[in-house]
Amino acid sequence: MSGWDKWYTNAMKLIFLGPPGAGKGTLAAKAVDSLKVPHISTGNIFRAAITAQSVLGRRVKAIIDSGKLVDDETTIALVRDRLARDDAQRGYILDGFPRTIAQAEALAGFSPVDRVVNFDLSDAAVLERLGGRRTCRNCGANFHVLFGRPKQEGICDSCGGELYIRNDDREEAVAKRLEVYREQTAPLIGYYREKGLLVDVDAGPASDTVLGNFRKSLGIAG
Ligand code: AP5
Ligand code: MG
Image (cartoon, rainbow, N blue to C red; front, side, top):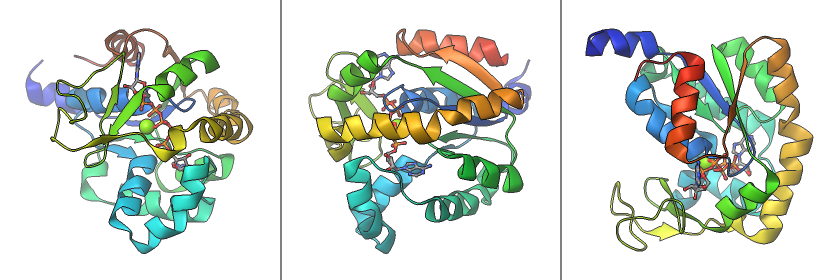
């Protein structure tokens, strides 16, 4: 298969579902290399707005820091606009959206997806991953003090930006995020399973193994 054939064969509209810290952002950043589709993370978009101190950023900062969800209306409008752009017409990886049934129903109306990948991870592993995460303030890349160390302490390998600890990785906010996940987001697993769109992938192993299993389960050429 030529490079171009592979590019077109692999293009898909995907949702990455899973608890906080499951590795959605880390895996999406790796998967887009072969899929050649944009990685669209609502969390990254909100954090960039907070850094820029835009109107949106100022409005959502306290909500995000506390681990609660931004309201559906704001989030749906943001994703609808982002998916209308040219680069999202062939496919995309949606990371962190939808997070409620209302968001899933809205998405089905403006951009039906091909598959939903459910990255499953135990609460104990979630705590270990979020407890050691370091995020780039500039590009949003994720590192870990044990499982994915940057080449130079405190500096992003991809863009040279400063690594920091997300406010919502504090213990109280993580507990809230897990509670919100169970109550509002986990019901999407059944919702998409019933529609025949769900693919389960164990997020427990090392990220390259998880990525390989993700590719195999979707038949994606490497
Ligand atoms: P968001 O940024 O989406 O946060 P999240 O869903 O809680 O997920 P995370 O980003 O914490 O985890 P991840 O699965 O991406 O894991 P990562 O790859 O970093 O949302 C943040 C907030 O924004 C929400 O709480 C809400 O307020 C708001 N928001 C966003 N979307 C919204 C929506 N649709 N509606 C309403 N509000 C919304 O990995 C975690 C760590 O583990 C890293 O350190 C990484 O290096 C490491 N790691 C990754 N994979 C592995 C592996 N296989 N083995 C070992 N370590 C690993
Ligand atoms: Mg993420």
